[in-house]
Length: 492
Image 1 (tube, rainbow, N blue to C red):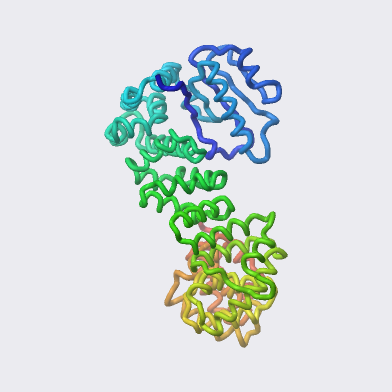
Image 2 (cartoon, rainbow, N blue to C red):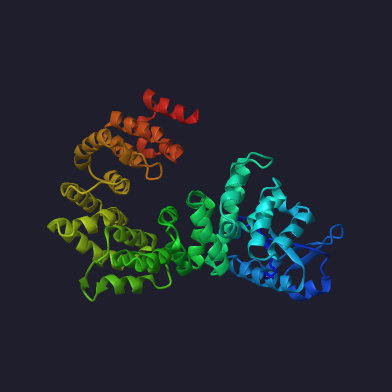
């Protein structure tokens, strides 16, 4: 007979409140003394329901730390001990009302499924899935991986495509939750969960790649167990893995996710990429960032750039910008000389400059070397290297602080660039046109300034209220075209 188990309902990764709690559902009323002994006197409070003696609520109370990881690990240990000694059917995390209200029959069904043997277990789960009942479907989906492994994808596909009492949107949400829950166990190294998730990824690749919840679970798994998350990604279908990697790449702001990528790159033998991610992981860990950065990039008085890819250089640049200035300063001072050398000589430009150009301007702006920003931007353009929104954003900031004789011809060139490549100015977070509107206003090019403000409105920049309140744009106040744009924003 298969090992007795219990349902875990509701994923921790979706919780954004400040006071988690759990409801435990039993096949029969548990022995209170046994429960109280397991949880002890220092593990929060247990609340027993006299109307429904099979239900017990656990409130960890003061155990809730600033970070929940330790609490979740403790919870898993406690629940495992409970289910070894008592007939535990399910543990419901926080507010999952549909399962709180599930009848005892559904949870008994869960028990019968999990204690069945091999294929019989999967057949029972598949039958429960076809019952067109929300609680029964939830119970069945806890065995989704087993269904796919033993029975195949036909019952799942039929359930997804057949119209019934459960809406298509609800089915999609439940499937995502099942995938995410299984992934969560897989990332913690549970072999059974890993096998089930792999089966889901093979049978339902579009679902695995497309659900944001799966991406979020991988992100959290990478933060907590980066090597195991990487190992799981490497085993997935390439199409599925690519979708998840792209999700993570857009959120690679933590040492854990960067370490996950470094592990993947090392396994794929792309060592230049691995170095870039490894540096990112180390540099974003504030405990030892300066010594590590100096060790990697600065040897005595000799500055060198690691032999990493252009993409790796981007990660390195982002890592440095995220560090406090006193930590990034020693590295940047060394790097700037090497970057300037690349600009002057043209050596290694394609690898070194695209990823680092915007950060180089950022550091010059931080040092209030606005002339230096201008000179390097012009040198970069003269080399024919690709422009980016980040590069234009940093240059626009400096442009507002340069003299008119420099600003005027540059603004004329940038208006032409806007006509040719408007997408460079469209990022609502970079807000490139805002700085250029201010620069044009300060230069007296008021018609151009209004045109840049119009671009801000058209591209729906995030801080339109601040743009219209900017003191650099005061010369535009009262102009009919400017006020008309202000009214457009008010009308949204």
